[in-house]
Image 1 (cartoon, rainbow, N blue to C red):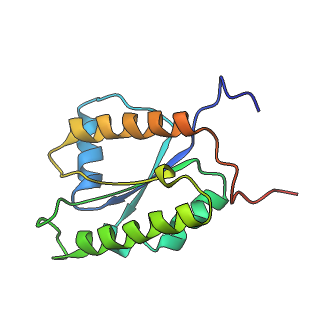
Image 2: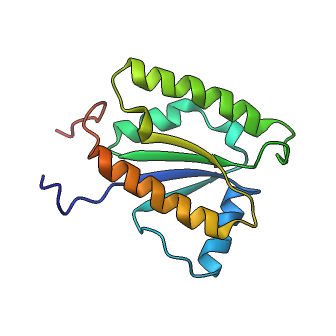
Length: 142
C-alpha cells in the first residue's frame, strides 16, 4: 500500500449530550474537518466498553477518539470521570501490547464548542497520519 495517498480511517465515539452536539454545531456552522472520521453517538463516554476500541483497531481502524462532556458537566454526574480512568488504563494496555497509544485519544468537547470539535478532528487526523496505517492487531481477511 502506498502511504503517500493513504488517508487514515478514524472512529469517534461521542457523548450524546456534549461532544455529539459540538460535532452537530461544527456541521451546522459548516466548519471543515477531514471526511475520514466516522462518528458513533453514545449515551455517555463512561459507557464505552474498551473492547469496542480494540475491536475497531482489529477491524482496520487507524485511530479512535473518545470524547465526552467537560469534568463537572456530565449529564450522568460522573460518567466522564469514569471514562477518563478507563482510558488511562486502556492506553497503558495498548503500550503493553505494542500498539502506539496515540492511536486512541480522549478529549472533552461541550455542545457550544463547534470550532474546538473541528480543530480536534483535524488534529487527530494529523496525529494518526504521522503514525501511519495500523498494522498490529488488525485481523487479516482470508
